[in-house]
Image (cartoon, rainbow, N blue to C red; front, side, top):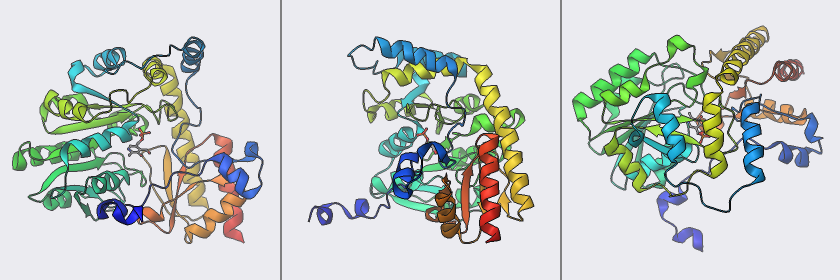
Length: 370
Ligand SMILES: Cc1ncc(COP(=O)(O)O)c(C=O)c1O
């Protein structure tokens, strides 16, 4: 049997459970796709900016039959200017998920380990397992990362520590000063033997005062990789583009294991246009802020505990989450069960448009009253 011939560490992987697509729910439950709302994958409910759509339409009209620029020169030049770092500090990824994989490919192997937090983004575990490396999961504190326990958990064979800030699926956020202190401690104790990957996929949703100067941190710490994405606030989840910032030695390693053409022509173009559309980003931030208050207030009115969110989703405790999720699906509402993240009593709800948030709250009120 082919499966039994695959390495044990590959067979041990529990496949990633993506948010259910609208078309799949429509097929399964006989619903009209237009009546379904999806609040499951932390996408931007506005889609992407009009300027991006226009640029893509124009580019699609005379798409050359050529590979993309393998080094993504134009996008990297824009990102270098935006982040105020040299171009050889940037690695492009097919979404930031790709960069998590590249880091584990470059730094992990059988006999080595990675440290990450309980309830952290599941891909840290998946990409560690895929390398046959040992994963060290550190118990969460108040749903978030316990940095001092993570520091203590670093073992002789540890080469990589993953931190999501803010974290998915809990929406928690560590103050920048705490993360900065952690980076200093790791460097002081382990020099560049241990690399820290700081995943800031939801950074654009933070209030400006909560954000940190990540490029400055990369300048300060040669053992730091910061990953960012265009999938969330920029609304380009479907195009797959993200990037990593790291000093040249680490960037060189990431690029050794990168597929040459990992970011497509249209994705590179869309990212360049999106980066410049600061109005769209501001609109997204404001909409999300209002939607977050709407959902959190609504959950409080329904006497549901939630984890105060720093992101574009809210983790809410609903009791029998599998049953509530099933009832929501029947009503054409897709949210994200998180039992696989060790949270069987919670659902993760992406913040949508005001009417979508309202529909979710009304559906929950009906289900809980039954
Ligand atoms: C914390 C975190 N990091 C990384 C990713 C990967 O996103 P993408 O590959 O679309 O950039 C996600 C997606 O949900 C995420 O939640």
